[in-house]
Length: 256
Length: 249
Image (cartoon, rainbow over all chains, first blue to last red; front, top):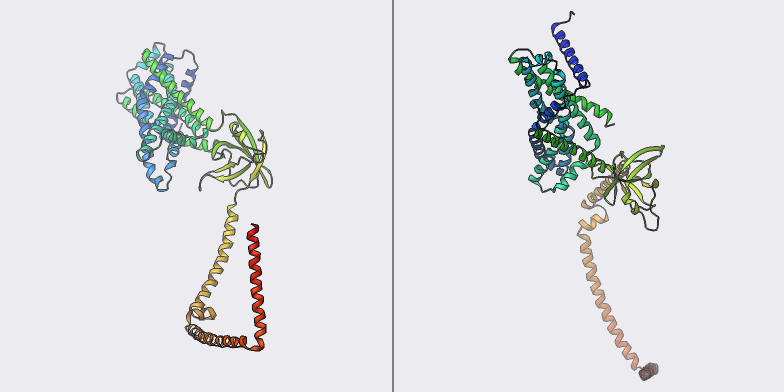
């Protein structure tokens, strides 16, 4: 192939990723699914990330409410703050911020874990000893991410509604029931489901990028750090790109 | 690495809570959109729905009781709107109910308000047609207001011209307001009227003396005496009548 080296390199990486993805998909259905490891990954990825996601979501709703209150108050529209916060958090901010936080926490840890296993030749020895490293390490992690990120996003949304409630109550006195009714009254299924579906793909991207970067890292010591770093960067960029695609798709298929 | 029991339980709680939030949200949104309530349908025809959309709220007595299900064009002047209402309000809506299109606040979404209708009429059935009242067309209102503004302009111009003339003392009204001549004339008129009245008074006194003299004149004495007698007879008769009336009572 006589292409320029950078293009050649790009195409090689793309092919490698496609190859990695097909081997991941093939290994899901291969039989002998590692349920125990999957559950452990669900615990690590889901339960262990709950704290950071909940705090982020809470602060997000609180801050967002406080920031929009003065502006809307000028128009006498502070009654619209709950529904505005609710819609923007559920449709956009909740999924994206949760995705980015999880990219930082989960993609880096997966990249570093698999990268260090690669460096210390644990993956090779698994292969030699007859275990299937893709099935044991990759499939479980990617699937756990795909299942847990949507749930984490739901928790973040719920927490940011709670944060918004407290934010509104710093300046005015609004009962919890009224706040809740005002928040959800302008919310439709077309706001909620695209956001949930979007987060499934965010989870897939986080797990896939983390596993790919760790699994295909070089055999040097510094490559562990490199794998973790590039996993976070790539996963974050992927989340932004997927979000842009999701917005286009929802506006084409849902809002017309 | 094996998962121990507590890790499994924690993961289970986490997953159950997450799915619980998902289900609760689905249920709340579905309830809001009448997915899980029993509903019935009403139709209403309009000439113009002024931007009403499927999914807009239907209100009955100010309460959200349903949504606009579907909007279809029947022919070139008729738009049919299908309303999906909660069955719980069906017993309050009579056959002569009126659906009118309004808006939620000055800038808000379009809504449909359903009036209850009047009592002797029977309650609506599923799929009934109720009267649709066309919304106020903003364009027409603006056109009318424009015409009003034009005539108001003409009116104020004319008024300004009149006031200008009056201020300058032109015309009879202007002279009345601006000229002292009239007031002075009026004063003179009143003075001469006073003198006239005084001379009339003197004349009347003279006439009264003449009358007195005439009464004592022998030529007219008989006439006056007769008149006096008549007067006395009348008054005695009246007194008698009154006395009898008192007795009867």
